[in-house]
Image 1: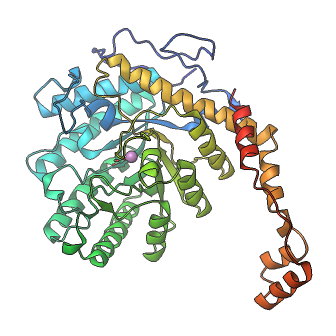
Image 2: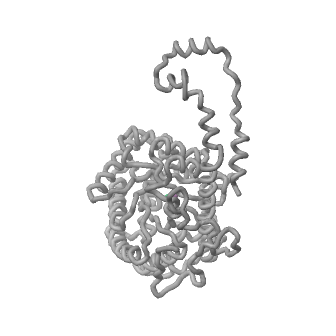
Image 3: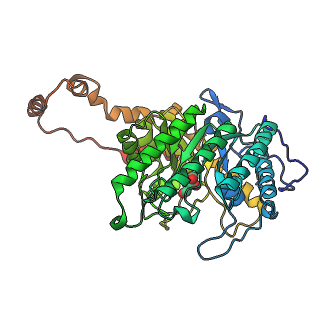
Length: 446
Ligand code: XUL
Ligand code: CO
């Protein structure tokens, strides 16, 4: 059972929704977990420790269903009070009720998810200080923790030309003030990580853009943010979240490989890792497992934003994850990388515009949590009981002995490679057996 206690104050927003129980795969209760059994131990860790699920504040408590063609569709009761401080507290009551009813451990926020941005920087700062006092109390009472905090440097019109990359120093300085506040809030709430997603850090047209200057500024900014956070005692990780486009035409943090190159170039590896999002991988024309593999191989696999895109649409639909095969393939990579240890799985996903019942928020999370849980069980089964790992290492067996091993160890030069090949002649053909691998994965989806 969850060690998270339910403290909802005197208001209950999700009336009639109980604490979500685990009932197993034969249950037909839509408000029960079929696969997420938090205390079940797999490979020495509980499911809860493996998965480290987080609820994202922005979609679930702030996202009211507006889109470029239509007005909001969702009248969340916690947004009804016009007083800024009271509305922020109501929203937080709803958030903690929701997270504790799901039995989850973590949440994530942007600064201006917690509070509405004020008319001045001073007023925004005051609002944030007030709500983070309240969040401290709610965290203490419930046991819910902060997985990561971040700052919204893309919503306000002042950032239309970028934040850290803005051609105007005054805008960059404002972004600095905002990030300082968001880092302070994260530290105050014991946040385990801090995220940078650069929605406007890119360009719409190269004609008016000095790319080198903008990237140099970004690196300088990230060093400043890291140095400030460390000086304030923050020991967590910083994550960069790659995304190729939207809202910018081209974003500098295009994909995992691009960000790793940037971090290496500007001496930021060591403190910074990646927060990878499924739908962002899709937009970059990669599979999610590709992005995970690139990060894992560079030692920077930090955290996950869980959702899915739409294979017919070219934009960021942020749907709740339900593609089991995609997640099994992804979790195979995560297991080989040693798991998600410092980050977690944050549901950066929104219910559809026409999913307007409060229960829909629960169905969406229950479904996403169960899909990840089921994928975790299947992936471990594949790793432990199938020939998958062996098949893949056998494929490279020619590098384990003799000349292949000498090549890997750097003991052969190009002339020697040529001599070896002359002696062997035409290599024998070896099948890649893709279909066999695919069948094996499918066989374990049961
Ligand atoms: C946008 C996105 C953001 C980041 C945090 O596509 O994913 O919500 O996760 O700023
Ligand atoms: Co995200």
